[in-house]
Length: 179
Image 1 (cartoon, rainbow, N blue to C red):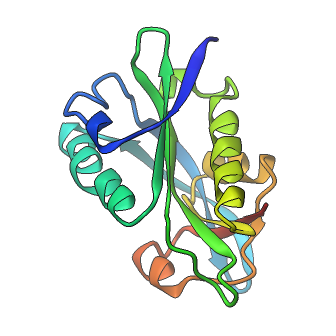
Image 2: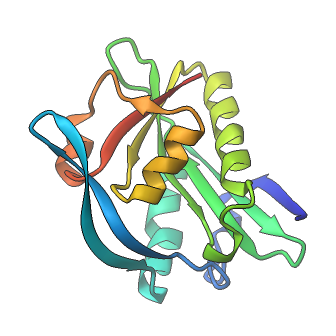
């Protein structure tokens, strides 16, 4: 599979950027933290972005990341369609400023399982290292598949927890990746 990873600029955030992107995931099981342990539970739902959600990402989420000193990458197929993207915060935090947060990493449904997400994760990790971070912080979606991906690329439970993030996303698993 041929693709190109590119650091995006504000000019790349056009209204049709996510036109061919399919954020569809049929979730059957989710992890929940109960009584001090992670438990896999039957919690079925469908995660699917409509055009309003795609517009919110293009006009609010990604520009906010860039405006805050963060970086956004896109992965494009040979036709120039966005098939994956990731955003990394530009604000270090943690007891010694060791973390940069991986805010988003998504691969379009039809391109999952091809190593594209893993390659994109490696680009983000390398950039974070170049920025002086020692760890990536990831608030990982509770689905079985999402957490499996992050464990597979080498993430572990976070040593420090960002309570502002856990307040917004109480079911996410807080993970880190040592750079």
